[in-house]
Length: 169
Image 1 (cartoon, rainbow, N blue to C red):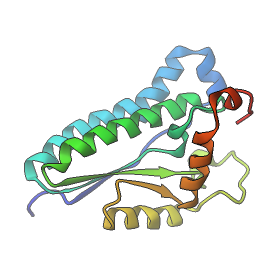
Image 2 (spheres, rainbow, N blue to C red):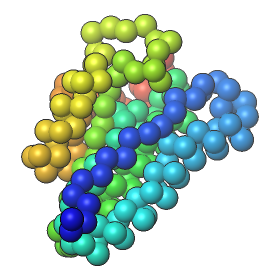
Image 3 (cartoon, helix red, strand yellow):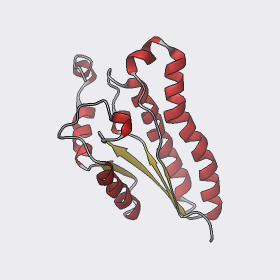
Image 4 (cartoon, rainbow, N blue to C red):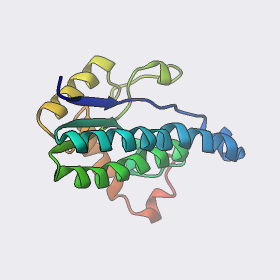
């Protein structure tokens, strides 16, 4: 069939932040699941795609990786590492005709977030799936899904550290 056209890497866990703060082994497990396992898969996939000189690698990171916050910095740091990894991978594979897209969802109503109270900023999985499909079709480098998270994160990233550390986010 000529190779693989598109791969979507979409896995992760949302560990309990306070438990990770007390237990490094648990924190490491969360980081391994959310970052290192992604790197492991992408190492194999990148080499395969580079050899075939075409295709798209789409990876779900998270808006949580855009800014460290006290409420989820273990998860956020793992997703931030994935985002940075993808930036470098995108640059590396560009020359070989392989596209790499970083998907940054906000709050999504899935089993991973079942215990959370849902509100206005929450998206349904089918809405996120349409955003991912669109990002792949349009060959976006980075896609916030739903789109409004790009604006929200632009504001959050612009908050100076001297103010951010005082906020309960």
